[in-house]
Image (cartoon, rainbow, N blue to C red):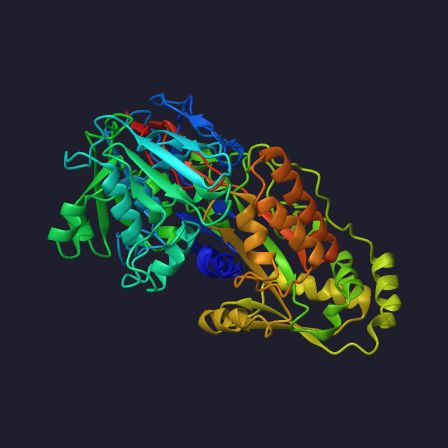
Length: 590
């Protein structure tokens, strides 16, 4: 099980939802508010969910995506103090100006950057990518075939495929690029997502001099052999860590990613002013055609400053709309005209974790169930988390095509909760030691934390302490896995597959399992799902496992989040993705 443990080690990103975080190009606030990246509308004949590939099935070729339906701004009741610019036409057609918090990356090397994904997907590209429906779309690959046993993937590259500098792309470039991402000298954390490839684990840990599962059959065909069946593997190949790079450009330029272009993405890095801005120009060699815009990304850390720039007309899009400025926008008669609130959920989860390895009474499932059933989640969402959807579990409905929506949460029932606690030997909470619910951050506890405390104390008689912990310390304590009895956390995943939000954080042998969860029944279900090639069967197994985890109440599902942004009416061609990380190659500014 070593490979499974290794891939899990860093593929899951977990951060407490008590403050604002950046992940995969999304800015999200504690209350479950988010603003996902506007993404291009694309259609393709070869679009397919990664899990639906049958053995020996050839996929492709993909057709060039067409410009999708323009997303118009949705008017809601709305107020700020600055009158917003409302022109239907831009005074800078062909240039998208965006203010964000991620245009100040530490690196733009796909093997060295994990928090700048919205920039990365606009510059880099690999064999496949995601479309707005969460399906897998052929990119550098024209088609691929999967062997009968599900372990061998053979990709055929597109004819006349070129890097952004015009150099031809060959199968050997794919092999070199994936091998480079696994280079132990680079210490790329995201490289664990490639350790399903045969020999990758040994190469990544400096036990081998090559990756045995990577082969260039000729200039146009590359073969990837896995060390086990992994029907979620294609989803991982859509990550920036699997980008194809121009070896000649990379090797001749020290810190090449600061000034040079070396991949196949839709845009070319033209200028990077550290801590100020990044300018991207359209790539004339992009496989889906040269984009119709250039992009200027301005680094603006303050939310109020971003909103003021939008109102003045200095930027065209602000999609990092947290609760504070959201309230301003919806109450402003001008700004509210540009507010966009899609109905699609993002692929994230906000659970209240009840860790049985950190608080001995939680080892009794009845105690955990009592806590779960003592919290009126609907009132919490209606009164405090107003931007949330009340969830039933971890996987947000509609984010993965074909995934069942049958999982149901434990219902709020304080009477039954009291009985469960009494049955466990703690009537009215008597005999139970105090435990803490922890949030990361500074200052006083948030309103939702006080709600948790009040509900558990009032309905069960349990003694609950609230603790605010500095972020660095919180992460360190979280990773110990036996330190934090309970914490409210945001769970996100690198790739769009149920495996990433079920096996990775909850499987007992996963090194990323910080929930303290151990269940033979759950483990057997996700082990079977992880190896199942039939998509319908695989998703059903995951849903069964999800229901087991919900019933075991190792977490209480609290919130699932929607996208929120403001955009000028002259910007079109973007859509929204569950994972929020698609490039702007179909966006237009008129």
